[in-house]
Image (cartoon, rainbow, N blue to C red; front, side):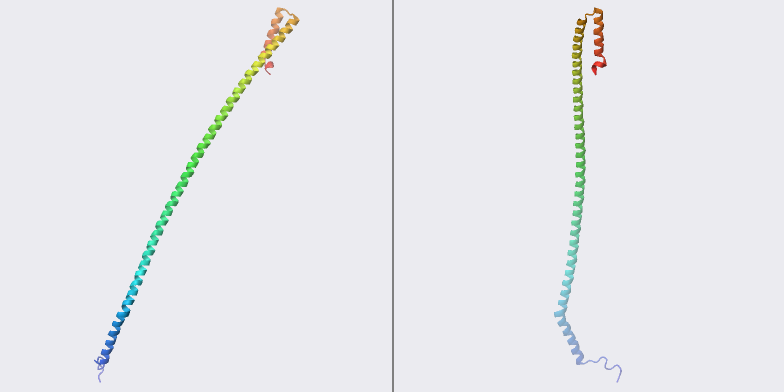
Length: 170
């Protein structure tokens, strides 16, 4: 026997074995390989769709976030504008209040000055009437005493001087 004799022998068992493997391969190809391939392809497509949907959702979320950020910025700017307008309006109102207070104070001062002037005129009038009554009293006294002409003039001058002095004003 030779060492190499039996390694490659051609017999019917080998042919049946190859035919069995070929038939098994064709059966598996027909029933399993296509189904497994389709299953794997479908799973790959689902995963790809999931990634696409996730990416699309991520883009929508970013758009929504940027929209909300923009709205927040707009609201903040509007708030600052409202505060600015309110401050300007408050300043205007404060100026109007101060102006009205100054006008009222001026009116009160004018009224007080007018009242003072009235009281001054009234005091002068009263003083004149008192001077006149004093003059009449002095004339009565003069007539009673029957003084000389020289003495009467002196007495009248003295009464008029006293009437004009500060003693009569107080």
